[in-house]
Amino acid sequence: MRITGGELRSRLIPAKGLQIRPTQDKVREALFSSIGARIRGCRFLDLYAGTGSVGLEAWSRGAAAVHWVEWDAKLAQALRTRVADLCPAEDDREAVVDQQDAEVFLKRDEPVFDILFADPPYEVSRTPEWFRKILNGLGGGSMVAHGGSLILEVAAKSPVPGDVAPWRLAKEKSYGGSKLLYLQK
Image (cartoon, rainbow, N blue to C red; front, side, top):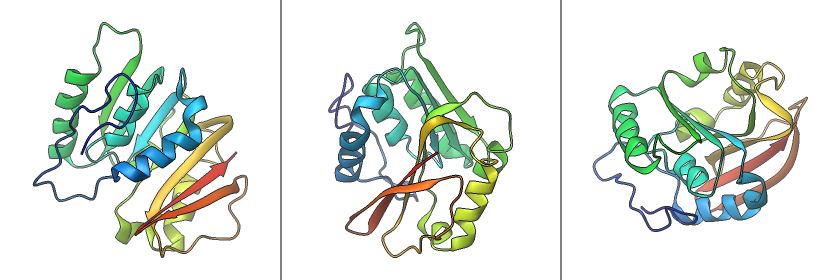
């Protein structure tokens, strides 16, 4: 797996032997093609980070701050090492890895993010209850800046709840077994 664009383009992101399903290169390329102009200078949150590939892609493409949240201690430690290697501390941008459950993290008082990306394990995202938990956890959207985006990667067959207020489903795009849902605040 490689970073697909920006200053870190072609750098490897090790995922071999990990019991996770990282976001595929083609899905990341499509995601960043659709939000590309908004990345430079934004505050980006990679929730359910896993390998951190989506947040690393945002960093590579010029995000001012990237925050990764991963509950698994082993994955979070590997991600801290990867971020320390690829996202230099002397850069005036912010790179933070937080080892915590996503739903607990969403209850914290955090800086407002311009783009929040969430890619939970597919078995979690196949239920409408998960969407409600995430949206309720966002407290009606206070963690995402006005005009900001919430992007969810879910299994292609995941149901999408009809009522997502104060969010508007702006776009839905499938890529094989994955689906990206773009919600605007």
